Length: 198
Image 1: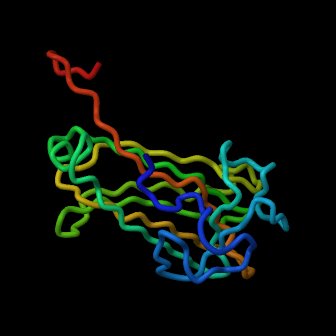
Image 2: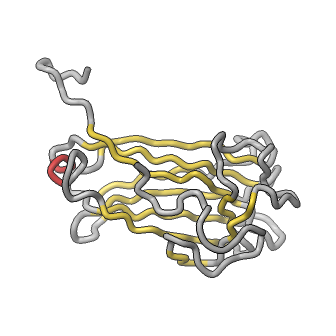
Image 3: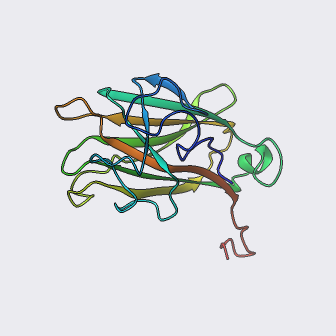
């Protein structure tokens, strides 16, 4: 199950390229993002451009700000197969995934990071995806999948998710794009009698 709220930009106001003051599930820390419809056109990614195969109707963009930043604080489960006892025993792994991109040959981009924190709020691990360069997009408007997976550090109790869009060139539009953001947990396979995972 995806622990993020509204990781696909489907909820709340938006639909065109106009910046919005708030985004459901997220705290806007800097700038003002836009939740753009794939049907909007005008140079923005469309359903025909590279991106998630099972995409919704909208994606995140950086709006008109040079730097736009959104955060989301995610409490980790207290109980169950991926709860605190399993985390502290090193038996829980996380997977983070995001489709990140930009416009044509421009280097505007999006970066998605997950910072795990202990019960006092002290960072204990960091995973960063992106930004995706114009060369990695083949010089075209596109979103490219980036993923990472590792063990949740013992003592972790929450995760701060940060989505940052950065405009690198001239103009007013911040053409960093993001969609299909996810953070999931799973129980690691147990070791066999020889200390090897099956």
